Image 1 (spheres, rainbow, N blue to C red):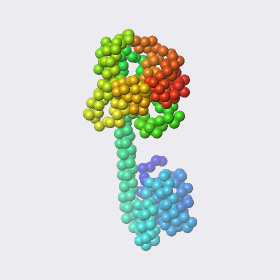
Image 2: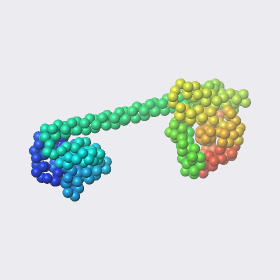
Image 3: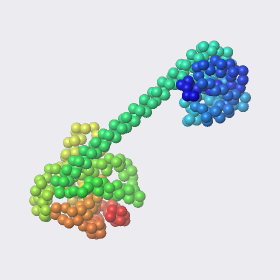
Image 4: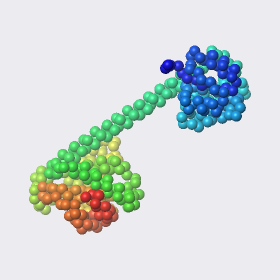
Length: 351
């Protein structure tokens, strides 16, 4: 039959003491009695008590050795222990409390006083457990709320980015594909120990998420240029090139209005540098080689590969093989040789 009574284990090598204790506590608690520390450990495999009343002076394994064993165990460490002992020296009491006992009560004891002190410690233990549950639940709620905010932010970013891309005549998952290519590039670089020291310092989740905003600056470009089905004139191309610098400025304005910096730092670098070229002929700043941030060099290859293998208003979709040939021709010109080398080594994964 189920009971709501607290469970107490009493440990004493004197059977008379066990019989007296059982009689004292039987009405208030579910009582278990054992005659040694070894028997206690055996019982703990079957019963999880709310409290242990522990004698100090026992053969083979005394109370101090027992409590040390309990406190060394992750499973039993939280069970409150009260010492019941005839040893009245202050140093013995200090030793017991130092080992983790919640109380140290001398024999002979007043049954009423002992019951009262047990009740107090059981109440304190219940309050500690309730506080722990509350703390755990609160932590879970915070994690859930944080995750929900992240998911909302990601959803808003994805929608904004896709709307921008739709103005460019791009549909069919450009954002998702370039994110996948970035992840694959980074994993491959780390596998080959290339740029590993710098990459290991990044928050990869934020980096990949921020890539959604790499083309946000296109919001400033006229539809007549973005959606032109043929080749752009020199004047139109100069206008198109402004989207990289404009995207960087958009993100800088957002930075001034929020405390969120890490995510926006990645986004700003990607927006402003993904059209730079290794040989210095890119835009908007004409950066060369490792002057170009690593984020931008990675985005450049992922973005170009996706542009090559998908249809645009001004071109057909190239096959994976054709794209690989074009990227190979761009090694050391458009693309970082190390990053392009890794792409070419693992190009089958991209295909």
